[in-house]
Length: 218
Image (tube, rainbow, N blue to C red; front, top):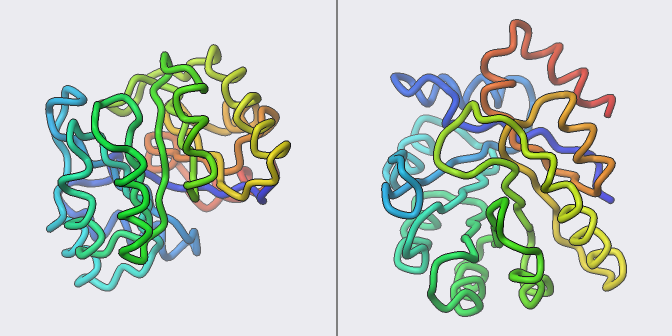
């Protein structure tokens, strides 16, 4: 299992100054930033586009950009985000498109890839792709909005995916996103997760450095 990795989510940052929010993460020496991309169709919300990613790069943000495409047609937009500066692009299993071709295309462009499943999607839906990915993201809330409550009924799914990883000797990271705080991080860690997207809990913390220190002790 990888050491635990805290990944703040830009969605919970200051949308009037996204570069400043990203710089908070960078100044705390956290290596990754999660960037949620929403199209208003696959999820009932809109967020950022490729130009946001490019602008953050121009502003001097050198973090690993963990870009999560919550889109009906992620295969149409993955390349634009990679050209803009994404370090990893993750795509959902739920929409109908050629998942395998899209995952391989992302890698062919020199970018890491990931597969994502919603809370009610069974683990079996992503099983055929486990050998093709750098990351599996298990949503622990229904995607679309920040600040939702963590769903503990997802924990057995984490156990199952972590077991497949161990049994098959695979090297993908296992990420969780949604309602993640210090308490739920510990539960997910016990279930096999190693990568933890925290939006509200991180950006609303009274002392973000102390939050990071507490997380590191998990």
